[in-house]
Length: 201
Image (cartoon, rainbow, N blue to C red; front, side, top):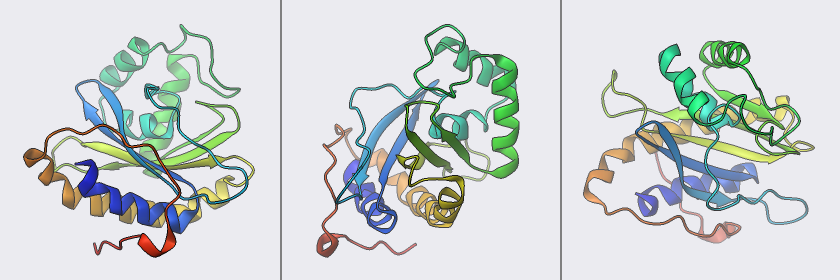
């Protein structure tokens, strides 16, 4: 799956100049599986490997939880430490009412967004990757993340159309996952402009 999807992530990373990350849904968890680094100079955000996706504090997690019924979303968030662990960043939510408000907003707007909620100084926007059939559960998420000084709300929303197109492309590739053995996430490197492969939707 990683090798099939990687060129799509690389393309978005080059276009945005930021870190692109992809997750898959595994039971009641989101798992980081691939990324692409688009920043080639100056301040950049590099993902921490082995880090769990905190569903209530990440753009990816919010986008995913918003597709679930409220009882499931609350159970998953509580199981992952909502209100029970030290806040990792200044704006991390800490209660079920906050979660419900955030998920209602996420459903209404169709994307997850965070500003210093999972990590200090980091903002991100994410959308889900649809399943094979219209009523299937989502299979994963894809996001763009970077320093808050570059990724204000206006910039994040400007990225959204390209992010959604990437999600559509990944959804079309996703059935191939049934024929591929799992692979480990590679170490992200800046994407060479002359080696980026373009994938038509």
